[in-house]
Amino acid sequence: MLEQMQGVVRLELSGCNDFTEAGLWSSLNARITSLSVSDCINVADDAIAAISQLLPNLTELNLQAYHVTDTALAYFTAKQGYTTHTLRLNSCWEITNHGVVNMVHSLPNLSVLSLSGCSKVTDDGVELVAENLRKLRSLDLSWCPRITDMALEYIACDLHKLELVLDRCVRITDTGLSYLSTMSSLRNLYLRWCCQVQDFGLKHLLGMRSLRLLSLAGCPLLTTTGLSGLVQLQDLEELELTNCPGATPELFKYYSQHLPRCMVIE
Image (cartoon, rainbow, N blue to C red; front, side, top):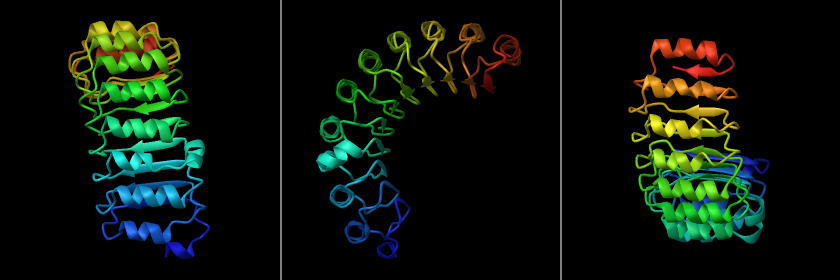
């Protein structure tokens, strides 16, 4: 079917468990610029080889594949290194820091990167990202349990004008937020279910005038007192506090009075 649809430039394959890597080799056409593959159990390294050789104009790749390894991230061509700006590797459990090395060298022009659920990536991998992918504008490290405050120091030193997603990074503490506070151009920050973040950590964020979106959903240690201080972020446009024990009706009323332009998600 795909062979007969030569005009397709965006392709999404989800839950196609009968689709094999051989199918990719026979069906991908060079016009495709955006490819998403998720929950296709037969997709592994050879699929990335097919993508790298058959899609020279690829700008965006979204991949959820449990069997892709570090080797695959070295397959991208020099042209793709120039054209590919978005890479999302979601729940690619076999990817390690060695894969990150391959990625930053083969795709140096990325502006959007997700390593969400890549549970073997550590702070050293984040350091490689921060030092080599200076064009990044969005970085998703959610569900990376080995990420610690040190990774945030690397990010703060080298990346700017960023959207940063740290949901379920359970080892992040107030110290990590102190590093982020030096990022004068950080615009969106997601800290959902970061279970060690406390009121003291929030104080580090109060001087971040470029912050437009802040999510603290599910952070269990934040109190009403600590959250009330967020009214100092007068340019904040969206604040998410779902499942946050310190978010009381009285606090939301306080926000409506002192953050009238901010959409507060209860």
